[in-house]
Image (cartoon, rainbow, N blue to C red; front, side, top):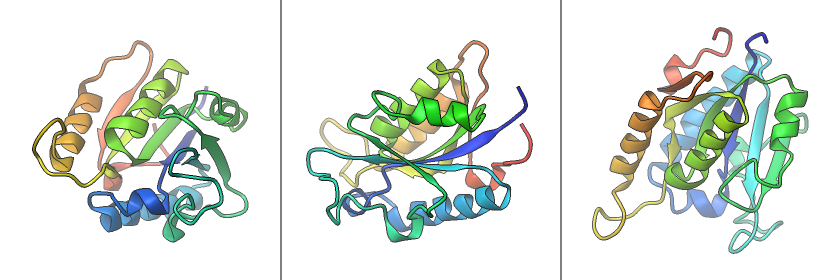
Length: 181
């Protein structure tokens, strides 16, 4: 199959951005990628979580204004960390002829990681945008690693993960090329 990327924007919603580490910086990185993807004719797929504190239709559930999808962009609603589970994501990507997903969003160690790994299992190549995903703001004490450590850890994993027949990379947004494999 010919190279055909899609940009995935995962859970960049108002309530989640409010608790995110480097929220403004991450939103800016993703907004820049959206512009580049659209200019290259690459589809942008927004994945939006609903359930629990993210009740559909509420202000917190809404996508942050800078990343709000245009009328011609696809929105996939999910109810778990996995953007593929019980959603139309795989069907949508296959209908678009996508072969590689460029992954961005919130939360690094939950929805971003789970969706990226499931993309591999669904036979997509994966690019994790190293500066285009974030997690919740929290101290580096107790059960969780600091946001900096968690993001760095996941970037390192995706630079070294081996998945038969799939190409997996973690690169900064500046190195994402929507025109070449």
